[in-house]
Image (cartoon, rainbow, N blue to C red; front, top):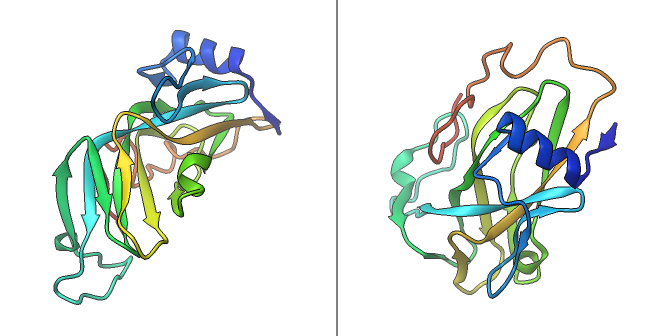
Length: 184
């Protein structure tokens, strides 16, 4: 497997719509950085958030997740309660090529504040807005800034295309448009 450089990410985004909208530079003036980097792409978080709340003392169950456990907000700055989390989505829409696997790492700016960003790998031929999870590991409220950098995507090229892609198996999170809660 090889990690793909900025020139490849740029070409695939400009010619094939791999990332839309695509920012062909690292934007950082007064914001948490986003855009194209040497070997990755720093995506932004949209202003749509689902803030976890447990007012009903529900049990978190990935097989039967209760959507009522979230409060929806559209804001420029989202406050994550202490020891809690929010779901969000990327500003960018991704279309992953058949021979590429994408992994995501959180921005160090957030990690250094105790805020962890989690995203599962983007499989070959997956497409959609990426649902992001921000965990506040601190005992204090924490801020997430909309339309600023949230995480970096790294593009790994396989030695060949897989026999079965995410599109082939009709994955349950294919072409997600908004913030998507767990599905079974």
